[in-house]
Every structure is written in structure tokens, then in C-alpha cells.
Image (cartoon, rainbow, N blue to C red; front, side, top):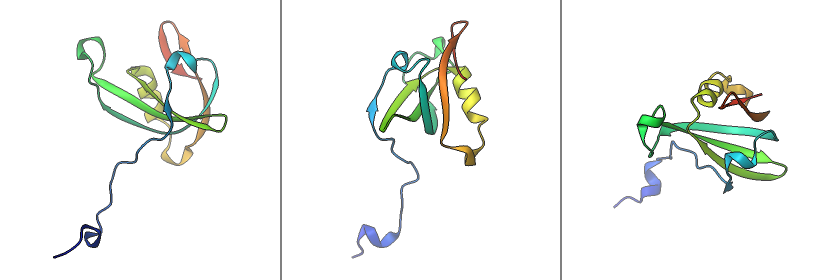
Length: 101
């Protein structure tokens, strides 16, 4: 009988590390964005686009994970070329929406 390790199967999803941090606590502060993923949201789709953005960020020397339903942030981060991660940014609130600056 074979062992699972002999199949050579590797996971395709990468786990984000660090503590969950609220968006309000990072607004207008410098962050380093290392990675992102967009998944289906578990919350009411009538209030958003039905998606949730997961951000792997670093503040100082500590890793954190941030979750948001912001369509503007999702749109912006998908335009960042794959080879340009990590990058420095601030997330600001402009006219009631969150954007990278």
C-alpha cells in the first residue's frame, strides 16, 4: 500500500499567516501588501458584490490578515502585476469607499 507522501500531491492554496486585524485599525497607515485572494463571501450578497478580499499584509515586522468586501480594493489589487508583490500602500477612505493610495 502506498503512502500519501508518495503521490507527490501539493496544496494549491497558500495559507495566510498572522493575526486578523480590523480594517479601521490600518486606515491611513503604511502597510506592506504581500498577497491577496478573492473568495465568495459568507455575508449577504445583496449588500456587496458577493466577494471577499483577503489581504496578507505586514505592519512593521508583524504579519496580519485583513478581510473586506470593498469592490474598489478588489478592482485595484487585481490590476497589480503579479511580479510586483510585495508593495507599500495605504488604504484610505474616499467618499465612503476604501481605496489604495
